[in-house]
Image (cartoon, rainbow, N blue to C red; front, side, top):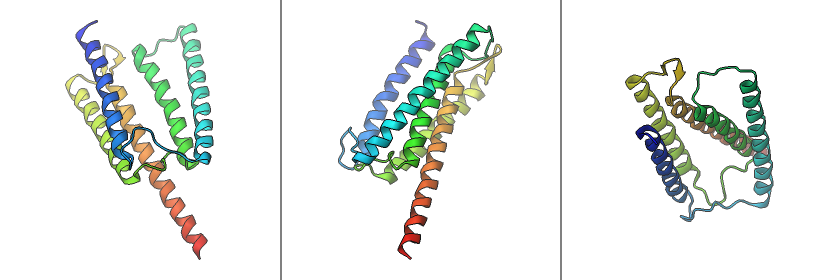
Length: 177
């Protein structure tokens, strides 16, 4: 294993540890496990099902592209990460629009703040890497693309949560009149 791959592995492990700490911080009770009501659990089950089938379809598409001999300008794990992030976005988006993303013990404001911080952090890492190394090296998109994808995903999540919150508030106000 070269130094670059070792750095990637360490970065992933550190990211997982930071994610655990953040989840505990955004939950009002300080616990790792987020609590959901029965309706949320059902909606989350559907969201996971749709995400699973999205990932299966993505992998089939990758197999077809490979079988046809089409060369993509992405490293192997970057392409796989794109599939994972698309599936995660399907799960998150479905959950948001079906009131199943924010748990009963989650502090929505803390969640929004951490989402923005994570998005900005990944955007800065991506921009810094582009400045330092470039976006395309030897005809291949660099790993910087992963940070940019994560940044965009957190921006999308933030926008969806904002729009959903405003829509729910408008519906509540209209119902009170």
